[in-house]
Image (cartoon, rainbow, N blue to C red; front, side):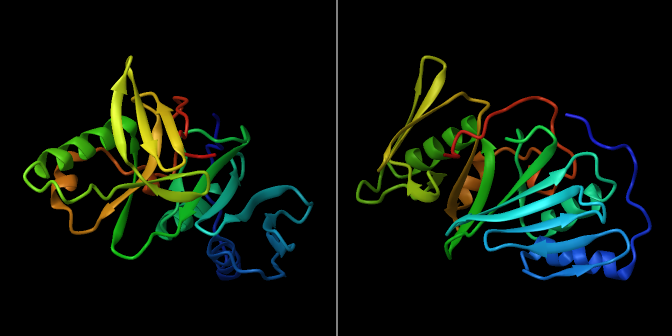
Length: 218
């Protein structure tokens, strides 16, 4: 995946404001010399004066918002940085080859969000399960995002080199390196010690060139 090598131009206050409105998902019609923000019933579009698309944002469901940002835009760095500051996760593999893809999730109160390889979820799951052996009446509380909603993970087992995640709506089969979105309780320090300290992809303004699937997305 190729990105423009240019850094952002010297942005005006108005251009920074327009990018901010776009990242916030505000439906406004506003333009500057180089940027134009407009909206329809289902999306918000950021484009150049000649109509070339720079970014598009959509509310995909109650829990999830999706933003695409053109890889070749000179405004990409500033847009992605603004999205990251608002808690957007950059997908490791975009469904649109000419755009980077960013997702925002509404997190239920009392939980914290993780975007990791499946093997990291497995480590956290079994670490928590081991700690609960002496408390059989308590369940592991680690919902995963799939099919547009959060569902508790009922079981997570390795199978022929991959992993099978059991949920209320069926099984999800993932390779160890597949990325998934999941939650745990904010107070669960045991989970935190089990999750890798690798750099958080949600604050990265560049994406890995290695293709990895987003296994929990519908």
